[in-house]
Length: 263
Image 1: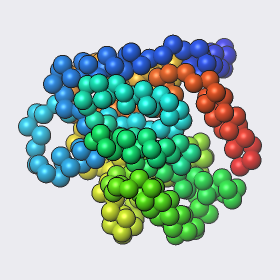
Image 2: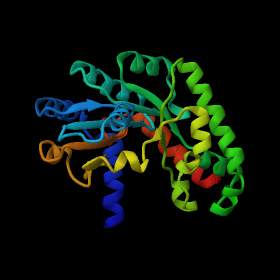
Image 3: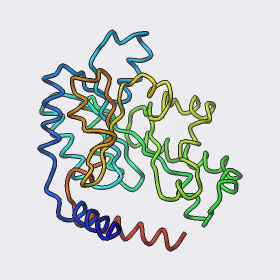
């Protein structure tokens, strides 16, 4: 029964669920009315670096990981512009949209890189152990450098923060992609001031909320329970959890099956 329920929930989430964009707009409205300063990860990092205390400021750090579905990401952006608030958008190589990223930056929000070089290296070479991957870390870091500078050059502006992507391969080999950004020398050479899971960032927040597929929607609790109760809220969203895109979801599902079989 559990497997049947899980399958139904996945099918509902990917193909039937009504758009939740009105809920997203309601969230932005409530945060605005409650006096939260809504900002990007980059803005928050600058805030941390420029002050010792937030003095009970109400801050909402809005992070979007664009794993799939750029069209819905653009709907997030329209809503944020309507209320004159800022956010961060992290794009994978597979979802890069340089013109959209330039638009985000021109507005004052943040467009940056959602990196996954460790996973991609493991998939391409059918590597299934953490120990083997670690032997190739220097090569993987060079690939990361090439991808990072390529995006930065095309974007035409400095990338200051980056975000590690999570994948089924990470769980299998028990190694996360931000192993790359543990290299402080590498960071300094590229001008990266933080990765989104850095401790000096996360230790300053009161609550971290991540969106989840139907029927949970939020973890560990609803964002609406946090507004007014917590001063510094950090929220992660993915377009897929907010609006159905049948074509994009179908392609992504088939890709996941294929990658699992090929790996």
